[in-house]
Image (cartoon, rainbow, N blue to C red; front, side):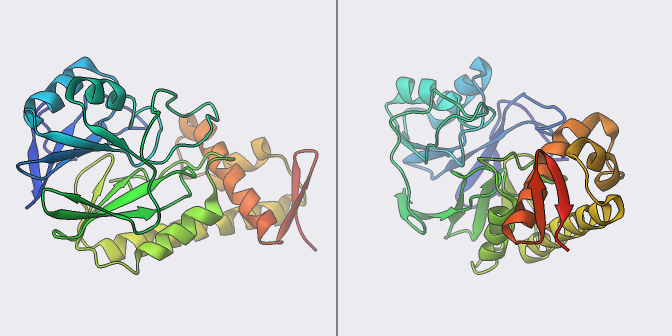
Length: 277
């Protein structure tokens, strides 16, 4: 767990500081991390939830120098503070938007969209947008090239794996995005929740292996049962996860099953899944 003083900025690299929101919980760990890039002219990446004290802290720390507000994605613990922070500071909103599937922040509107590998210059620091669909289809990671620091939102989180919620979340895309990140020159990872992660290649390879191992458990369970619904599969596939979390686990299980269908390894009819012969 990171050493957190809510409302204070902690240096995580030469050009980046972290401010953590006071929204800790099962899904958010110690809270959502907002990252401030630059020294004279500033950008905030992931302003977080609409907590007044957190927005006040970001406004105070940036002190009239905020020019851009970027988001990794529009889930409700990452982007809702953007609208109010932009109203107070006049900063430009930057990030990709998708249709609301029931999980998106509807207040994030009017933002400048980003293309794959598009670079934004912040106070002389190059920030490269890496489109990483998977956790959700509009997810973007930001590589601070000068520091070789990758800000990952919910694509990579400290101390846990992320939930993939179809249809906006896609397991096939998620694993492909993790593999694509191995092509970049990264020294450390700054996640949306948790502390900075060293040895990024090891972490990314671990996450890929973990997802494929979970996929194999899905295959094994379906093979054993012959055909099954998600509620019957969940306790078998996630027997190593606290049952309190099985509701969320079932969402990622659905994503794994859809990947198996896309890979032409499984079929589904009337919500009953089975492996192909």
